[in-house]
Length: 426
Image 1 (tube, rainbow, N blue to C red):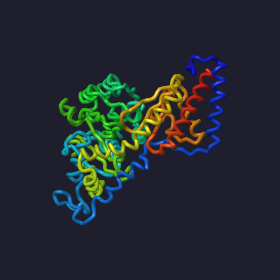
Image 2: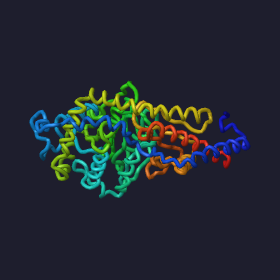
Image 3: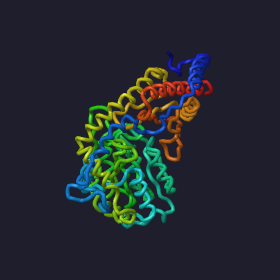
Image 4: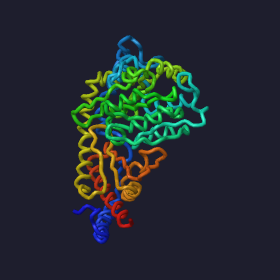
């Protein structure tokens, strides 16, 4: 078939009639399909079930140094869990605090500490007239929700193929003391699947912030989430910051939420000793210690980084076919029509589809009307405002393969319909 851009008005109108017929057939099916969030499938979660049997007797509940994990204490996590999480984050155990089940909770807390109490003795952000965060886009919607909750102004930073536009980042950070942070997903970014290059990581480490309490919020959520056998490594941002004379400039976050149980994993923050001491001052008022039983259970089940990577290869057996099915459907149904482009990540949880400008909101509306729920248009941008209305996040992980195949076909029909409507009415 012709590229839509090459069609005459009459040809576009005739094509829309055919597409509308197919679309109406899907609507009549009464579908109820969900691709709205990057949730693990039931099959993936089942593969972590043996972890529940990792502790079976009272002797099992003790750490290597004899601590009873059933009791109070251990504010910064058990040593074994610190070693495990450090190995995943490519840093040292002494740089790590192990916490509860949610890294998003840890990130929220860290922003809240800056807002209410300040960072390492600095003035609390709530006392400033203006506080700003840089937000690489498209990005993770829940990051933006956190900063919006505190009334922090968010600034879009375009993403390149190797990470954020560092000229813009340096321009803001090095000259504007109202800029207190930047959100980053450095490996298989949400939703574009971008992996930060060595050059980008080093440029981050060598920033010269105008604000002494500026921090990089380095959400390494997909540090071991490979779809294929190729293991892609990035530089250790904590080590690079130390080399550059900026040891306190970064907080790194990670969790096992998409490794074991999404609601029952463990999370961690890694940083310099001074930053960790500052965090623990506040943390000691919040809790006597997080769930050490769950930390120990994870260590017994996953063992070490090699054990984690083997587990992730097992998970990829379920996840990879889902990504490949979506890619295949997009290529077969939309290839050659010039209606958009899509990412083909080697890891992570998402595919980004870029429509023609002004079409994304309409595509999502059409999908919903046809029974396919997707992440809202605009979600990968601060304030849910996509300046080009062209970015859609596809989440292939949760539906069954049969449901996913159907949802992907509905999506392609909606892309065709929205694009044709746009071209005809131009």
